Length: 392
Ligand SMILES: C[S@@+](CC[C@H](N)C(=O)[O-])C[C@H]1O[C@@H](n2cnc3c(N)ncnc32)[C@H](O)[C@@H]1O
Image (cartoon, rainbow, N blue to C red):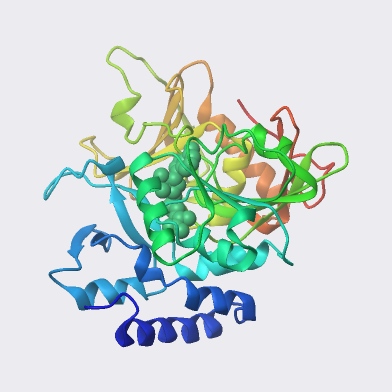
């Protein structure tokens, strides 16, 4: 690898572009094709990236071909693990920054509906690639990008400068940044709550586009438009799973984080299979996440409990209430339930699930959200004015 704009890289980039033009719902608009060529993705990747489910390090200096293939694959490339503190081989690595998959990057850029002249703020600079694409399209003076991690922000600044595009790169928490008169706010980290300052930072008719997640399920894009009354309102759109915004993370991951010695849970049974709410059905999970915004779950397969094949744990993010539902591996109901804490969480899950089935099993795109300037969130079904019930 001798030149950052060599023939091999250009061929790899052309290959990716032709794949994107067939896999995306629409081929890239001419302006985005120009940006794709002018802002080469590989120029934004560090020499060491982490690949695959196992987050295996890949060093450009040792395996340049593998590294370049990753740069021009339609897949995310992890560029930082553990907030920059790689635990090394055998350690528990988790991704804290990635260059998002090109397909979702261009799908989101198309959803911004840019005509030229818009003032845009991106939250989550990461490698700087998306900010570079925006700056190529709009001009650097109209684009601000905010990154919470100072090392990542510095790297992105250098990468952007190396190819001659100059958006404003701000180091800070994009959820707290003071802004006003913005035409677009696009986040490339997911949120569980839309920061109030994004709503108040929009110009009339301005748009917020952000990946969404609840503790129950990480899924979807939320596109909100500023209304005359100061609220921002709009629908969810399919796909997308991004890393959660720093500042909204909760650290609970396994049931051992919530169950304490000496707790005596109440026992009962349920006809509702735990697999219905925490299985493959994303529509059910998405709806439960809107109705139970502070509840998460984790499976424990093969617990050391007689007669239990799999146990579903459900808990509040503040760890004050939990429930466990046991599947003994025989055909179906009833399932044994254990509940502890001030909230009867499994009863709430049942109520949320029955509301969803009663509403005709709506999918994520049937839902929307309205956020007030004070930060109050109201999820709705099909139209504003039909609020989704919330528990807790
Ligand atoms: C998926 S990466 C962004 C990809 C990026 N747009 C690109 O083109 O490479 C998510 C980024 O969001 C950043 N981030 C997380 N929380 C943030 C916050 N509160 N404010 C600003 N950036 C944040 C992370 O540090 C990470 O770099």
